[in-house]
Image (tube, rainbow, N blue to C red; front, side, top):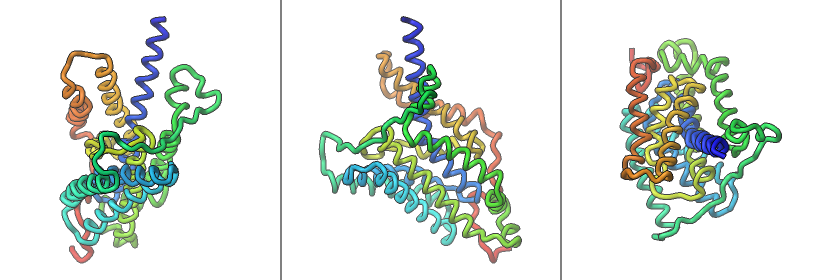
Length: 313
């Protein structure tokens, strides 16, 4: 009985870890494309929050998860496109633009949610994605439940990790992305359209970030509330650094943070007599500690955060 209980507890913990890691992984993949091209988007929080809000609204009104996901992706791309315009064409400071978008979208989504639903003590709910067990594989003890009894968001994330790695490291498009992020002047001289490549990389950022926000409402929670991301966009930025802008590394880094968050919930439900604020701090403390240990081990693209001015020598 004790052994069975330990296996059940381990399975539940690993499943929670995977679920907590998925939005960070998706957002991290999007930011990787952006940073590889030289665009630093601190506005991941805004992208995820926009994706979460619009996916919830559309899913709530239509009762369709698919339409909700599409709306979330569109919301993420819209916010990312604003950042792209400001960073690529207006040449503004990319960090300030991202932070401004974070503040704007937090206020805008809260205002729109209040306009649509008003003040209420109960949160409106939307449909969520069901778990789809994979035949035979889902029956494997522990591993089967953790990996092969998940929703489509999780399965898509695993596929996206492989595809992102393949495109970045094994295709001509990936070579162009690296060239633009390292030396845009040389890339331009070689005939590459720096502005177009950077713009499409930010679209990818919006796609994955919006999908990460959709997962929060349509995969994990089934509702929306003010500032539902709670800093996950900033943590995703740390995950990108820890993962060294490499898709498999991003997944591993996200799992570390996800494990800390899952452990936090387990400790709270265990009734440990410790102030709840300490439990809430735990994932962030672990993130900072891991980031501190990884300092100096991740090399960023040479042109990251630097606007490209074609006429400048």
